[in-house]
Image (cartoon, rainbow, N blue to C red; front, top):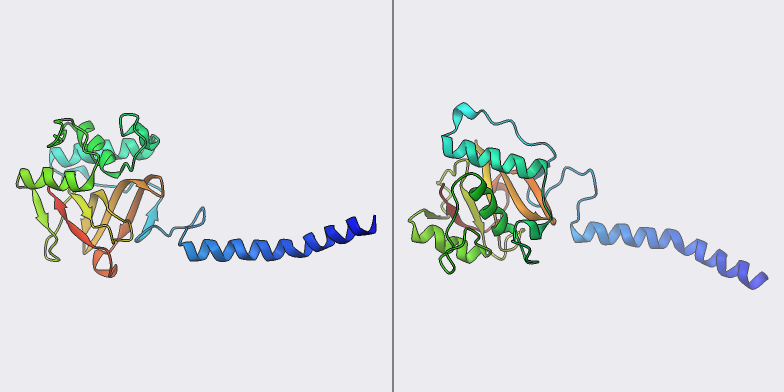
Length: 200
């Protein structure tokens, strides 16, 4: 009986150590705790930004409406990937543009869905819509941002919702395994590694 109590007492003393260890691991991994406003590269928004439709072209307005619908009722990743379990950021971009009435055309298959970031870049290059990264370029609503593999996102892509005063508000899929909106300043993220933009 005494041995059982002693073992329980030792386990009880170890519990705070385990909690502290878990907290340190979370901090080191860069995970944002639930309810945190910290995103991957900036401030994570929990509400869709207010965007004045009078400032948008009809095409931009359709992209914003399609993105807002997906933010309000997001699917799991395979829902954007025709059932495939794969990284789905480019599939999300493909889905939103198709829903906006401007489907992409995969240069390899002809499908509306472009599952890879490199292939997405090839698509924009083939249509003379790719802009290699230049700090002077000012992306617009509906432009697609393409990131290199060493960015904080990894190799990734997302869509510009708002660009003003050096700040971007982007929406992307497969960001912390969900559909996320972030507001951030490219000039303030030293290792952002933007490869370029696909123009709407």
